Length: 219
Length: 68
Ligand code: SF4
Ligand code: SF4
Image 1: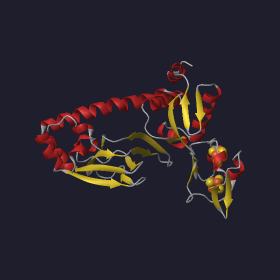
Image 2: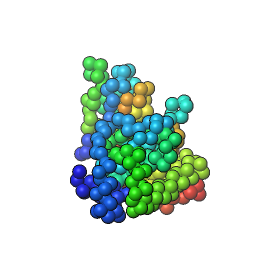
Image 3: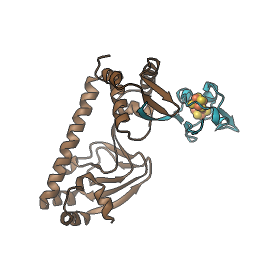
Image 4: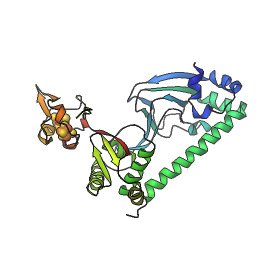
């Protein structure tokens, strides 16, 4: 296992070589092709995952079959940590490979065992989960408080600041808890009003101030 | 257009109904022996009307998002 791959994982970034050497023995490397399922909601939690490269989509399925993409995670992130803390818990969401994916998996029992044995690792996991929690709280806030127009504006600003790949209107809709038509309509409205510009396969935001106002519901 | 980004066609989902061929304002698409093909790729403006017209969700246009 290459050391440099271990360093790509955020959670391991400040862990000593000594501890890393122990963790390494519990990691197995795996690859998934684009589109394949990595885990299913409600299945018993068996593994924790650390993403070496590629992107995954975390999503839920509504009873009517509509997907709500909760988030897209990229290289360096870890997922399925929460259900590992209680053996009665199942996976919380579905995860699939949005691109070709390389990851490390760690057996759930090894994970809990290592947490007990290695305080340095427990602290890193707690720190990582705290950061994830902040992100989730922001997402919940966005979903519950903002209108679709605000959500789209806020999404566009976030993407323009820290791009994470390319998005179809359908993917944006699923990420934002709405439907494709709605996204199309709002984007066209933004374009008509001169807030964004379509340049072939690019959506370019013209002016940050206006976009921020829309995102805040002030416009 | 120098960089030829084209909408993605999922041939497995396509039922060759021709709706996108009709919808395209630039006659970029045609059914060639029942297979949807880009016959004038250079004329594609990436307007996504083909994507909107497809009843099968077989065409998708993806975008990079950035600042102007
Ligand atoms: S994106 Fe527009 S121009 Fe290009 S093929 Fe589709 S409808 Fe035609
Ligand atoms: S509209 Fe969709 S299903 Fe019909 S020919 Fe075009 S791609 Fe195929």
